Image (cartoon, rainbow, N blue to C red; front, side, top):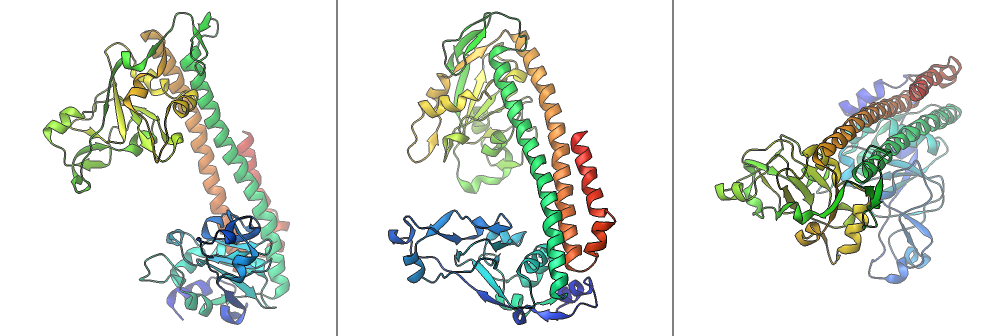
Length: 456
């Protein structure tokens, strides 16, 4: 017995008998029907589980389905409903050990395993047992030296489990079904709140950069469908009349990792305001740093990606980044002096209608690509400079408020996930008496505090 296994077992109730997993269950693998045989995949109605489906506790639907013919003529086979499923080979095993239970008859791909449990072991208990101790089990079961993160199946089946009697397993599983469902509902509510906050912020930005923040002004038609009406004293101009566009640097991969600051695609894609300090470095020349400079007031747009949805995201530079250059997957727009207040530029190109504008005007062949010409022809609703400042600062304040609420909500979600994991671990190792735990109100009290926070 390894030290890892011994330490894990010492945390379990010492009056629970210990079994090897291979004496409690048998293992079934899977396979992948030939992708060249269209008949295996067309109009299939048999769920085919792969690691990408292992995001729920009960698996009844999958991204891919196969036909009866595929099952007959390949290495995959049927797994009955109610069987524990585990990912045995995937990059996700670097940090987690996905486990679930089949909600219907399914088949598996070659990176999955299914347990067929005997009479001593409740399938639902096994799923919770693995989930609750996944960090320890990953260390115990990991197969070292494999090109892709994998579970050593022999180590797994030789592994030991402290197991209560079947009646206790059922009580523990029922307790965890009830408590985790409540926790999951709270997490879901919190995550919906974060999504709603983001939607409301985006809507507020779209309105402010086309209608302003003074609801009493007269409006006029902008002449652009996706912009709609604008304040009568605003103008609509093509971006190309307001400044100059330039593509970023193209340089060999061996130039990266040292040298001078490098503004990457993700620096722009993830931030409305460009980070003052960036992590990328590149061996750029003095001429490069002049041609692809990054100055205060510059606005950068994502230029190319696999999908249109990732094109045209903007990020404004508030402080000049000395000696920096920017990536070839970006376009730099440098406004003429007095045309844009940077705090307004931060939001001016975040209008939701821009997505439809780019989708309509862009040709998607193998990759979506935003051309300088398309960007120069993009219409922009432009208020006077002083009003730009007011709009930008107003949106900045709103964004800070929304981000503060969202961050607090994310921290609560994190605490709920930690509490959920701790509760499962404690239950499946006998550290808590699940019947007494519920009666004294410990679990409900913990969740009630979270519910009260949500309503505050």
